[in-house]
Length: 226
Ligand code: DC
Image (cartoon, rainbow, N blue to C red; front, side, top):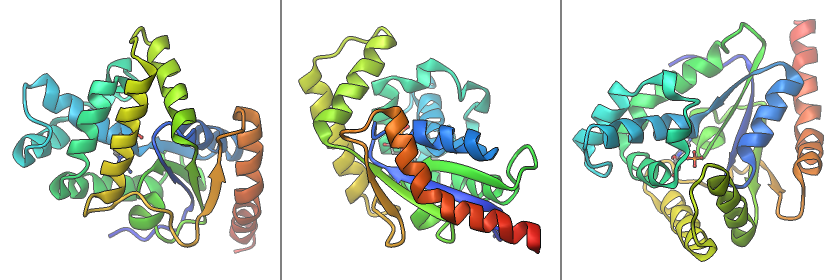
């Protein structure tokens, strides 16, 4: 296993909590590489669905993880609620998680672009992928607030859903992510909690920066000294 000596900001949290946006903005701020690990599970799920497989079937899900197309990481088709739900099934399968483990560790150990650090967002970054991360955030928000954000995102993609259905689905996804036996979503003991329920993007970013900056700046200084 690679030893992670680069500077790592782990951003975990619930669906539609704002963690992806915060992770991207933190990466841009520090000039670090960024990986949305949820996209990996979505890509694997998309591959399963495209080939007519069952995302909850171990063999189908593992084949999806082995055949996924990284070029589709920015494709809006992996952002639909159908792929999101399939991703939560695929992500609960241990063989899939171990198939994607090395990719994530390698990304953190040698951030693309050759910079000193990386920001990764997901569910288990600070607990399983990189327990030694320099800084850890656990981002959450009230279920209704997150559902409204997700509803608006889906609407912008041309997907019209009743708001109460989105509330029910996000609630079910939280339960699945938090209660699966492998790598469940939980706040690492040394992660800072950031509740974005009543914060706009700028205020949430300012709060995130205030929490991680001292640790990241300290680590950057240590690297310059050492
Ligand atoms: O963050 P997202 O909605 O794109 O994640 C899609 C699914 O992938 C979600 O149900 C949880 C799962 N996931 C995970 O299990 N571990 C991660 N590190 C990231 C996402």
